[in-house]
Length: 319
Image 1 (cartoon, rainbow, N blue to C red):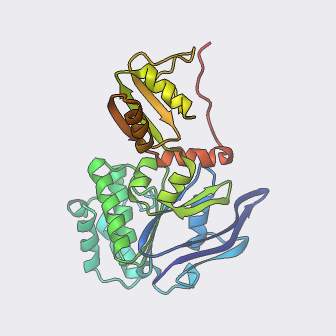
Image 2: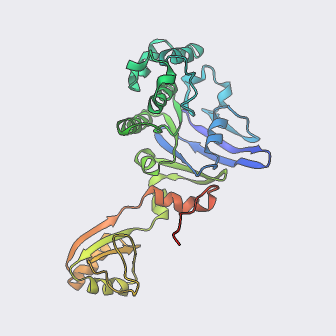
Image 3: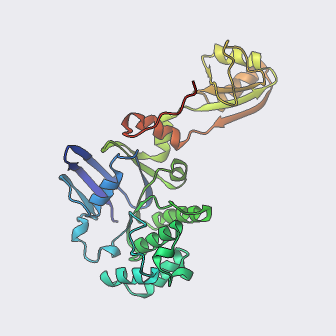
């Protein structure tokens, strides 16, 4: 089983520590999401793993060896870092044929990956005529060309249409089920939550989290319950008496004077549905709605990384 091992990895550019003593492992058989704000060091780390840059200190190995020591590396590791990399004057097929020849990969594999990525009909077209989504598919085809055990993909769904996003999601999960090692960098939290089994989160070049996705969310976002009743005043009194807090939101507004929401809708923080259901039953309060507000990866991610965000914009405020 081939894993990515990063130990004490550091990269310094002048006065900037782009990567700061990183240590983590990417294991086979699961999709690992690689997250972090802009400037967190994700792209630099992937470049270091792929031997495209030299570390200031520390090591990055694939299956126990540095990438630069792998013979025919495309047969061991596939990567998508920049969909704009292929020369625009080449056809898609010729681009892949050149890669195949350099790594002793049979020519028949080129047509296989063109078909797998859905661009077989465009194989004879020059890359400069491709849309962003088609270039992205070509980059994924190149990553899959050597049928590698390890894949590193940077924003693989960038430019893809909805069908393409579903396709790449299922492709990554299928590759992981085959026992391959899949590391995926992304800024799309909702999409990452749909495919990532494990998360590695960076902030300002440092490791912030290395944990299963479900554990990451559960540890940082409190459970919340949405409820609607015909007797909101009584339910509010019961909820507050038991130490729970009402949450103000766009669709569940808590009056400024602390009174009862007029439409009977309430959002209750840090509690689960069974607790509120039991309280309502005990007090004889009829409930018209009782649902759990699902915690999201986006909420958990922002909770963790806000202090480690190098670039941020303030929302415009009206005078």
